[in-house]
Length: 271
Image (cartoon, rainbow, N blue to C red; front, side):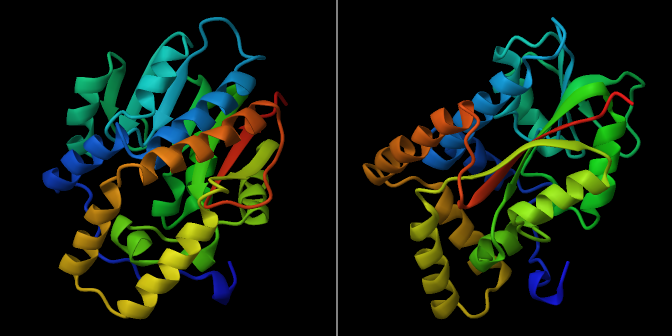
């Protein structure tokens, strides 16, 4: 990572024990356009990624948090599904949303010996100081020929208080993500930006916020983050409709040239 790609020091994150923010997050996941559109995109990628996998394939989501994507993986019908997270705070809510097996554990020292046919990591590795190690550990959890499904935030020009408060270390571009996956021993099947329709809005909003809030106290960052989790009626519906149109493009294997997030599908080679 070059000096220009380095993120500022992250502000204190709400993980792992801010229950109010977990409750706000759970509410947002059920109605905010961003979470709903992301799930559509993940479902589209999952449908393609699962085609070569065996019947009843085993699925692991690393960093499953409150179970928002985990319940999508469960509904996909991929045999046994396991959710793993380091923090009990999110898992308490995941238990209310899914019947999947849930494990509190560290991906670098997983509390099981089995390998999985599909591993998902959805907006996880940007939180980690050593993302390369995380990808290598994810590869070790995959059976040969297994698939990794991954999403991350895109474009360091969109860096803001929201990234700092969420505990992000970085945002990615397409080439950086591809290079990280290759270095971890994956074959990269597909990489695409998504949330393209929201990119201009987010860029303007991030610039405006950075101009009006040059420095944020932890409370200011928390309040701004909470405000973003609360959808605006009408606007939320329009943005959801627009962002969900991208899922059909991703389902067909097309790659979008820009967006506020990135999606990747990668394979652990057989040999």
